[in-house]
Image (tube, rainbow, N blue to C red; front, side, top):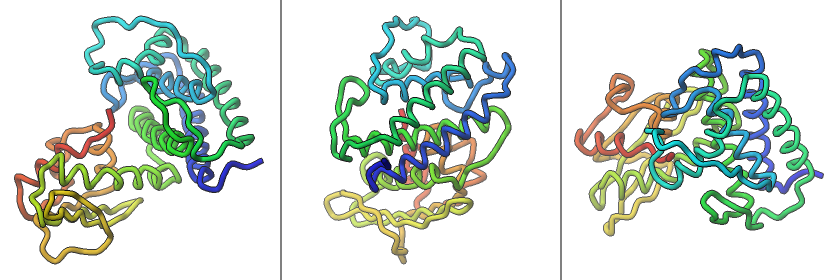
Length: 274
């Protein structure tokens, strides 16, 4: 039985990225598992550990009972501590142990997805004891898996899949949070417009409009007089939105027109992943 039509695109995107990750890490020698990735504080091993842990939780299995060390500088806040448990518990696992657990977990998750009969609005567990709909859970697993696939590709020097199904899911997630980024986080003035023009493997041109009450909305219509216009390539947008790079490090890859201070504020608050 196939999954619900509204879940299928996320299932397909997740499967595509999960298989790509499996192929990336299968031939790694022991030292390569320790390579740093763009994800702050996480190595190749850590990212794979995270993915194993998240999929294991999607299977409904209990979380490991584990106390984190106190010297993990990149762990800040309850959400980060929650995520770090599944990572730290595997920090001393060997490469063969990692690939074996990853393959076993992906086999079980693929079977679960193929046999999925729950409705998209079914409530399932989310991080920190919260709940979310099954559709949101599928969407976020597709998004998270693709983003970490890109982390691994950068760390291992194997670029690719910037236009894969997961990339399109990521684009939609980015656009969903863009109005809040511009209107609330960056403080764009009321009755203004900001244009974001992204080119490359995934392209989009969107205008964020801030109304008189300071609320933002996004549409595909161009603005004749935007207060700020940003133009950048897709890979740079991804790295900024995922918090993998600071705006100053990619300033030469971003074209800015209009209010420079507001543009700087937008770029500084573009990152929304924890």
